[in-house]
Image (cartoon, rainbow, N blue to C red; front, side):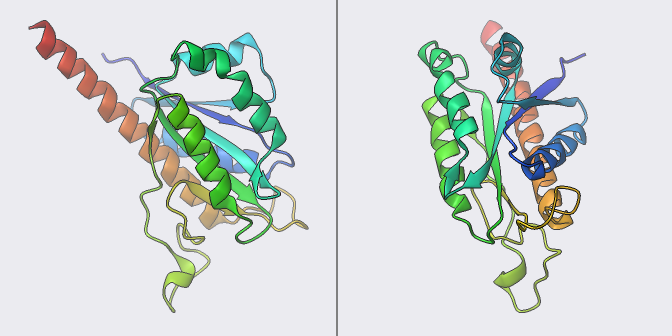
Length: 204
């Protein structure tokens, strides 16, 4: 029996909204047979975190967007990963990203671009959202559409500043995050199976 695929969701959440988005990503991962999700708060920079990230087949990074960029807590984690970078510890792992902000736009794309570049520096394989834009793309669009914010690089969510995490993000944003988690798990599964097959052919 094949080893399960492990996807670590490595995230920071300032007020709980991005944590809710992270749980949705985890639900998407867990919906794929043979895949398991592992939620990790990157503000806890201990040996257990680094070991989990080292074992993972895929890592989905998440951060709120503050002042047009990732949070300082997430950036601290990113900079602390330099020792992993020096040994190419995450090279060829699958990666993806998600973010949340109070503003409808909020320059979330800048955060996702920064996270994607961070993954590229580690030599990881980036998985995009893989959904067409929803809501404002057509006159019949709805806030209930998947990818209602029209992002492509990763999963975006919006949480009004006067609503707590029990009310925001919207269900459609959480379903978009769930879709990303499922896509990452499927991609990681396909890549793992391909590597095993290739190893078998090479050995033969």
